[in-house]
Length: 255
DNA sequence: ATGCCTTGGTACCCAAGA
Image (cartoon, rainbow, N blue to C red; front, side, top):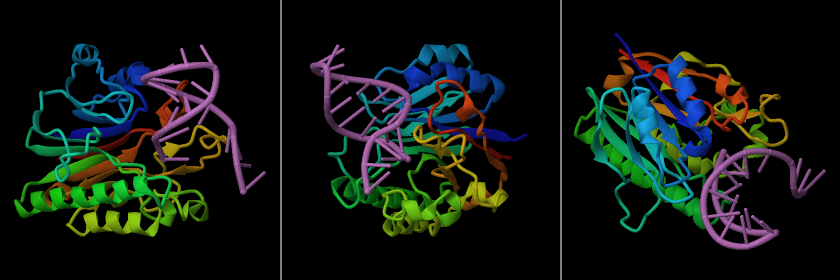
């Protein structure tokens, strides 16, 4: 009996509610991590009628993360520790069944260099500290979401074009590798080695039909969860729908 | 080399996204 869990940056839950409901009907995952709610309101009741309970951290206009789950999850943390002045809704940590789930919307960081890039790197350091704490306490977890990190050349169509971008700069990739060095595994790469698998395609310049994408939505698993991994895949189909988000879902299965 | 879309908020353009 495996537990399927997905992550999807929907680029406004208001604009994408019907897409999400439709996708859940065809893909009845146990839990769905959602990023970029882009508003304070969350359509809890619509998802409850579809068989999902909600926990979310939202703010006006920007950011926002939610976790939908078939059984009610228990809130552990609604914000990333390490900076009391940080008001951005980008982090949600819950207990679901025997799993610790973490949903993140990691800052974009452009333009780099600059204050936005400093915020991104600071956020990644705070994330590292929180995950190190969970490792130290031997709490198994899986973290998913929009990392806004292109880990390697094979994760984008044109690496040269991304060289100086906040999603691909060397400091960004180093900070991502530091997370992996805590013993975490990029779940997608357990099952797929080749280039050309993406989770985001820009709205502009025909990026989707040309498959000019980047792989920036990820699941990282701590060792005990990695040993239970059955599958991890990207469902590109929703990107081709009318009024699509610019991201598409990534799904993993744990035994 | 640049803009190309899309969204939300406020106001008929702008910030932010990646």
